[in-house]
Length: 97
Image (cartoon, rainbow, N blue to C red; front, side, top):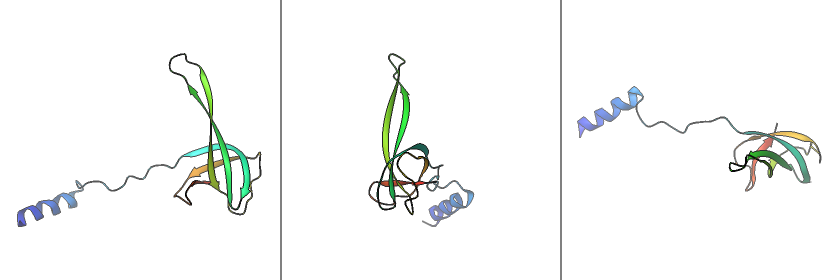
C-alpha cells in the first residue's frame, strides 16, 4: 500500500499526472446584426463560405448567434465582432467586443 502511494505522489510531483482542462483560444466571429429587440441581447448573422468537395463550388451558409450586448449599443445593420464566452443563458454563448 505504502509503495503505491509513494509512486503516485512521485508522478504528480514530476508533472506526469493527467493534465487538467486545456484552455483554448475562444472563437471570434464577425457578422451583421439582424435583430436587437431583446434586452441586452442581439442576434448576429455570420456568413461562411464552404467548398463543396465533389464539385469545388463554394456555397454560402449563414448561421445566427445570440450575443450579449450590455446596454443595447448595437443596432440592426451594424457589423460586429463577437467572441465566445461562458454560457450566459440557454442560447447565449457569445458577447460583443
